[in-house]
Structures are given as structure tokens and as C-alpha cells.
Length: 330
Image 1 (tube, rainbow, N blue to C red):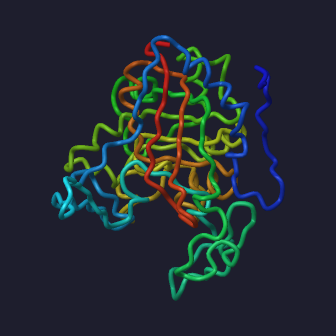
Image 2 (cartoon, rainbow, N blue to C red):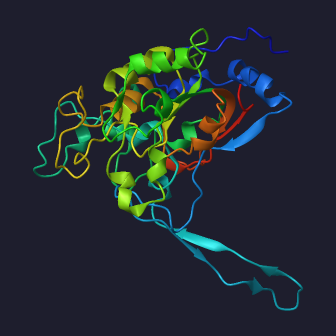
């Protein structure tokens, strides 16, 4: 029998590890879910956007298109059936998760002249390009989606829209700092609990209000975590962080198009420093474009969350359907 004090492991992990902070998942995190699953007024929250041909599309991947086939039948039978097909890059559109192999880094900035020196790319755990993706067409041999287990654990939701934005969505480029995170925890009555190893952290910024309005340029800017916040979350050994915006990194006006600098505090040569810290250094997973509005409206600050990526061998990213189970107002 699993005891109430079941320990959640924390880093460092053994050499050659490919799971990162997903090593925290197991009986110790599953047990935390019991109180939420057994609550008499618990509610299920869908934390992903509904997929369709009408959703905004990221410029970072081919557009996804769903094609719905005509109803067909089998001659000589009473059966009829329907189906659909999809083209494009599902892993970069809609609510999606990055595997640890999605992001690498070079020892020095690339000049952009000639071919990128992929032989020098490094990944989480010190893996080299030859270990992870030895040829341009190969799947990820290390750090792919198939190495990530299901995430079943406790989750914390922080309402930055209310705490930092005073009821308004955070602005493009606005940074959520460690002090903001700790302030939100205290304001929401979670100061004593804090963030536990193996937790998932959801942060509601209100940026998702721009999701359905094509004039707002949802994918071209957005708020995000500061670089020091990424390091702070590393110290907490959380398994995953997710925001309701297109980048976990802050994206000021003009930054994505190359017409402006990254957010303040970003190290030189690392415009996506939060991605770098989480995916290549800490092994923290990320979900972008989460749908957190309903859970924030119900003030569900803690819950049980379940996140299962596609079991795509060698995949770098995945469409994802995270859910949370919690009690409104608690």
C-alpha cells in the first residue's frame, strides 16, 4: 500500500537520463490526486483549445488542415462510417507540448552564414546531435516524446491576470518574475504549500482572450516567464509549466518578426532563454497555448492534472489535451 508520506524523487538523475523532471512522476504524485478525485463537488476542466480549421495558426510550423471525408459504406452491409484526415504540423499548432529533444543549443551564437554547425548542437543531459538526431530526416533517437511518461500529479494555477494585470490581460513582453510567483502563491492562500517537486504549474495571463480575434496577432507577441523565473522553477523541481500564450518566453512587440529586442533580462544570444533553461538544462516540460480561463474563473488554485502526450517514437512535439480535476472555489 502507498503511504501518505510517499516520497517524490528529486534531481540529480543518473547519467544518460532522458526523462528530466518526469522522473518525479509515480506513486508519490499519484497519491496527491486522491483528495481531488474523491471530492464530492469536483469538476473536470479542459485545458486545451478546441481544434478546428478556424484556430489561429503559428508561423513557426506548417498550417494544420482537417479534411472531413464523405460518409461511406460497405456494399452488401448495413454499415456507414465517417472519417477525417489531417495535414500540416500538429505539434506546433493549438495547445501543444514540447519534448526535451525539441530544443538544443550551440556553444557560441551562429552567424547565420552557411549551414548551421549541427555537429556542435547539445541537448539536455549533454547529449550531442549525433546522439539525438544524427541525420536531417531521422526521428529523435534520444529525448523524444516516447521517453516522456504520462503526467499524473497535483497542479497549481496562478492567476497573473488578476494579481499582476489588475483584472486585465498581461501585456506583450510582460515578464512574470520569481517575486510575482511567490506573491501570487501568498495572495491565493498557497504560501504555506508553495510549489512541490513533481507539481505542474499553470499560469493564467489572460492572453488567451486574443485567441479568437485574428486582428490581435495572438502568435506574434505575448507575456511570459522571466529568465530568473525559469531558474526559480528549476529549483522547485516542478515537472511542467504551462501558460495561456504562444511562448513560455515573453515576446515583446516586434520581437518575433525580428524588429525588436527580446525581453529585459534575456542573456545575449539566447532570445528564447526560458526554453533553453527548461528543456536543455532542467528537463522541465512546457505546454503552450493552454486554455485556463474557466479554471481561473472558478478559482481552482489546486487540482489533479493528467497530461498524456502522443506516443510518437522520436517526436519533438505533440498536440496535447491536458485536463484538471478540482473543486470550484477551493
